[in-house]
Image 1 (cartoon, rainbow, N blue to C red):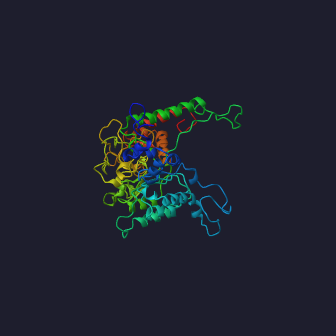
Image 2 (image 1 turned 90 degrees about the horizontal axis):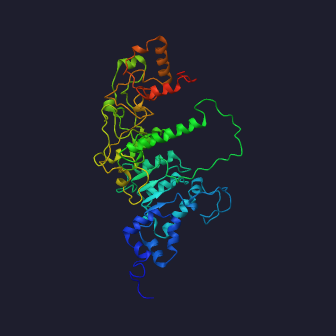
Image 3 (image 1 turned 135 degrees about the horizontal axis):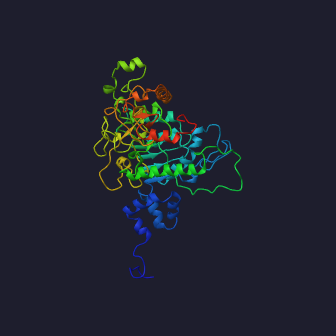
Length: 456
């Protein structure tokens, strides 16, 4: 066979294309690990590229690797695939659950490719805190971005200790190597096709009564919710959830210990959440005395709050009145990197902190500002439905708004019963029971009129 020409065949082989570093770097992250090794087995040239190029395993996602999942076997089964020796009583629980991932790391280290991994994804796997410590501290690893979202058998208290030790003041120069950790958010999952429910068997549970419990009403409510989300995303400048009016970004509030850990890691290790920078977290601005608040037994709206993780995304427009905030919104490229969370999805082609934090714009306009706060800083100031909110300079939360939802409801009902509701200033309360008074609360009252709810 003569040499290949443009006239009768392709001028380059696949191995020739993948030998180009730029092509390989852009292609490899899209291939599952199993496909990479299958490709290496097709020819000597591709085998050499896969096992000797530093770009192949720069981004390593083990969350979809079957051998990385702990099988549901008893601890005394007599032997497991990822350990050569027989399991005995000396094997700790952490060693057992980290066995599959450790086995993969051992194989990569023998092939001298473990040092090339800079972005490591372990979402949903069994990852004890000791394994995270090794990834952060051991010289065998060179990980810059680590994702351990929704992992199993991970002791959070122990992980906090690992992180605090890694950022201690007396740590060696150039450590830790890791720059960002995805931990608090939800991992990206492949959307599965919805399964059709069987129509042969009837449900034994009694169907609830009421108009809103009907199938049509539930479908309508679901579509209204989806339409609201689609409209919010369309009006936003960025597709990133942190820059939209997404509301609560975490299913549950993080502990104070996590907030203190993030404070210790500030400027050294970034996370997929940030600390709230509201004025109540600033000791110089928060300690303000107020005789009226003390007399009513309620905390002053400007009372000090300890460091807290910001869990509510408020969009990029700021306060509904002044479109800003007292703490100054974070603007990428101008503010400190510690003010920005790591964004999802994890960047495929770069392991830098800038690539993980930089927001995207839909129309190519300027990067939007970031407004995020904790729930305590938004109490009585934020509408949970339309996500409007008012800052401390534009709205002083009244004593009524500082009360619990039950106390607020009783106060409003008493005012209506006594006929004194008209005496309340119209703008004295902007948010009641998590809804803005001017629009969302009125709509809720109209929807509940005539029902057996509290507005019936």
